Image (cartoon, rainbow, N blue to C red):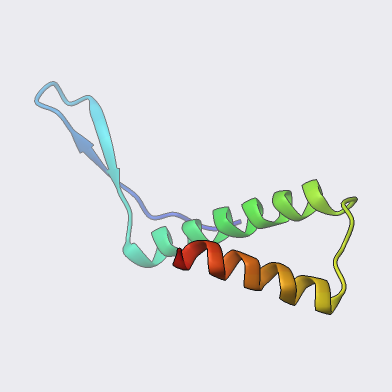
Length: 69
């Protein structure tokens, strides 16, 4: 498990209102969340029809043309 070193930010009543974590740990958390999201996306589409290389290249060209116009 990822160890998170955190510092609590308190308001004037000594109630926690925020947390500070080192940037390196934040970046690791971001990477974990992105990877989790990618896995979920892959799982969603794994039963969908796949394209051949030529079909994929044609589709990519259509997308490029739509972006340019």
